Image (cartoon, rainbow, N blue to C red; front, side):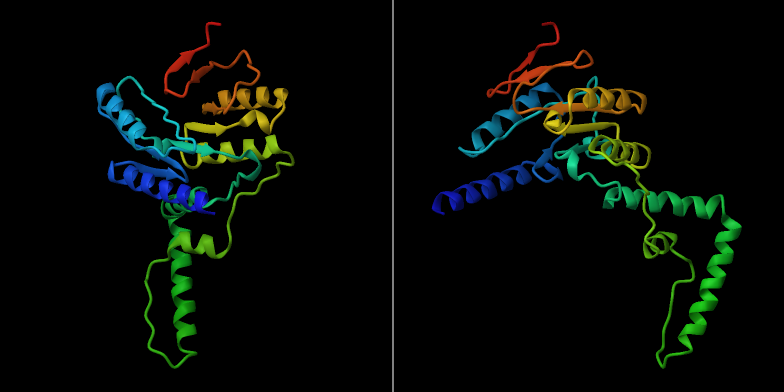
Length: 239
């Protein structure tokens, strides 16, 4: 128990260090920070090495795009377990409702104004039924209407691969996600399923980055690199 509490305390101290150093949490246990150049990035990594806990796994991955700022929190997603992906997670539905709301006010403006008028009349009549002084907004928030009716994405994926593809298609088309980080994918999918997933990502224009804790089988579509404990990158694509 004392050892566990000590580890928890070390984690809290390390997390506080990350936040004070300007890191932003994009997902649970995933933090990112923009660096102006490679020298600044080197200094950031050195600082992490000095402050990381003695126990536990802390990994650093650098992502660059020809010296341009790479907004990972905007265009990337992390899938740590393909078995629990959800096409109707909050991020997807929020973006979906926003898109539908904009479409309603532009492509269906006449129907939208009629609906708004009917809703106001309905609420005014409802207000007369109770002895309270009530007020309301005069513009229907279509997003709240969609949420109230439980609008969601219909999925028909029966297996792990099909469900994962539905999810990737949703975050790509609705949220604009272009980069997906997957942890230990080959634990959950067979070799032929991984091939199918790679082909799907190619046609959907999704950049798939597969992170493994240990070396597994390699496929011809992959470019493999090894990051050792000193955070040195070993390119194995020529082997």
